Image (tube, rainbow, N blue to C red; front, side, top):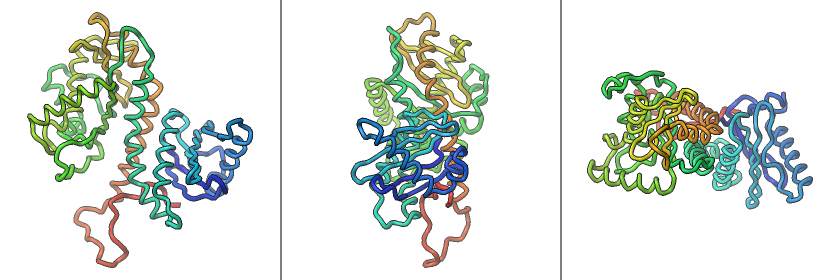
Length: 369
């Protein structure tokens, strides 16, 4: 998803910061120029200025599509900053623009010259994690609010599960269904919401267990009134089950999605859309199988006869975002793997006091320049 980004002073063009996640920022067509950050930033800054001088509003470039990547430009007047973000060519332009503005705001809040690049990179790491982790939910919300109208049907909610290990066929009986799931999904049934892309509730005094590297990602988005109903139900359930991490209530989002999938697989199959539909509680529960993603949508306002229109509505809403979501999940997996490899091995001796500084809680996410 993200090849890297550079930040320059929008008045002078001086390079202030650079962080790379892919070789040559994913700009193979730029040749050796992409390996020199200073020359690359100067050329892109000149491109931005040229576009600004040629436009009526003096706004400059916002995006520039190349065969191998998309360049996104985000500017800030005070302080005068320009962020140049390189993302995968298949990623949605709206997602890249949203991420660029999030990173620019985080950089502006933390950039205090003459802060060394290593210290700044360490300070930016939590914001980078948070921005990337929030992007799938933002994409689902965008897809939900911009869903094409198909009266009387109304798209109520969307969820996406990244589960490349999910078998193509699963038994219908509950016990056999759960037994047939791959280990990462079985283990995640009891995982805290912090692993599943949801806001953690309950006691803040007890730390959440560390997320396993193979655990799946689940993100959800709902229409405003549906979100309020879900929060009320969740509060009632918490009162009944108590608070804390690791309880059965903590795994509710993932368990609910998998339970609904089990029911939907026994319902109406729409082979043309690779979808399963089930009528439940006055709405259609639609599951689209788009390996390695599983998409769930709830559609209201329809009739209990025939789920194909509901499946078509969900498919049309999420189709523009599927490749972006897959790229995001793959990028998250890369970061998690890099964090895991950077963690000290269990049982390793701690560094002696005064021997080169303490350990950081966050790993450096970028390639060393």
